[in-house]
Amino acid sequence: MERTLVLLKPVTLQRGLAGEVIKRFEQKGLKIAGMKMMQLTDEILNEHYSHLADRPFFPGLKLSMTRTPVIALCLEGVGAVDVVRQLAGATNGRKALPGTIRGDLSMSGQQNIVHASDSLESASVELKRFFREEEIFSYEGIAATDYGYADDEL
Ligand code: UDP
Ligand code: MG
Image (tube, rainbow, N blue to C red; front, side):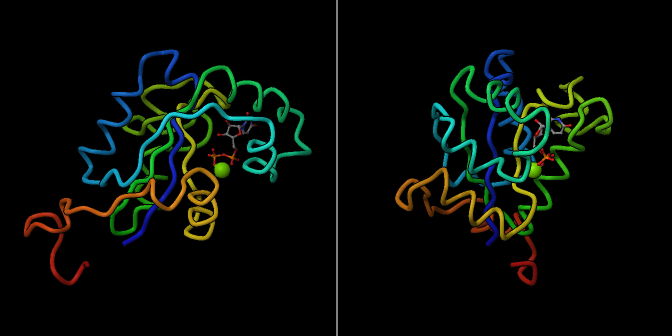
């Protein structure tokens, strides 16, 4: 089963939207396999956003990610990486479609509510960056029931 990383950004905690965002993932049927609050450091952000290091907004982005702790989620489901990216919507909240998290909750290209891994490969790297092995849990969720997925989807 696929697992992916989501970070609820500081803006989300400051605006009191953490519950709203987690609710959307839960209602979709994604399983919360890990969840924790953490204060990000310059070190972890340099690694996490290394692909953006030469962009003019990089220092501001890092600062915005340290204003409060973040909530890190490990979400699990069939095709979870793509499903979560679809739920998140386009990077810029002004361009993200209504119905998506960013489209409904953000007007910003930076303060855009969530980070979500963009591929299976980055999900695997990013989950290791934010979670220790024992912080990700296996338990019976919707996939263990007969109404979550068809047999041939699992
Ligand atoms: N970002 C920004 N300005 C931009 C593009 C991106 O501040 O012009 C920030 C934004 O918070 C985004 C993050 O950098 O979520 C990572 O950018 P990426 O291109 O990886 O977008 P994402 O995967 O988050 O949609
Ligand atoms: Mg990205």
